[in-house]
Image 1 (cartoon, helix red, strand yellow):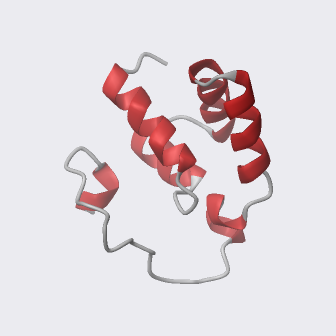
Image 2: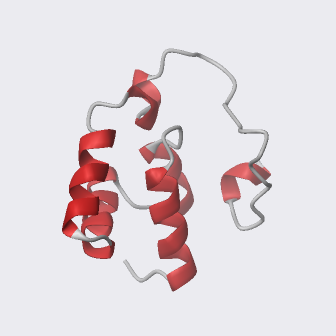
Image 3: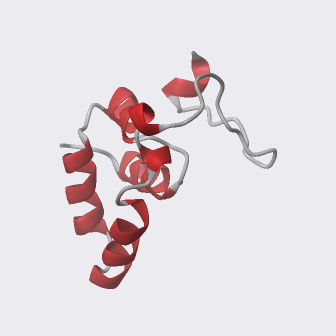
Length: 90
């Protein structure tokens, strides 16, 4: 995993977002859920990492197959279009 600082920041940001799935991160950056977890472990303070893991463990919105809604995506009205985000260009 050789990512730029901007890419690492974006992966961390996407991992923190409740409604961004691990599959979306894999689609955009080509890294698995376990690789995201390892990256988060390296990039965060131990207490912050534990808090994040506790929050995302078992969270249905972090896995596409566990989501309860079938179509559409949630987008906050305050969220701006991200130009480097491949998913927003589909």
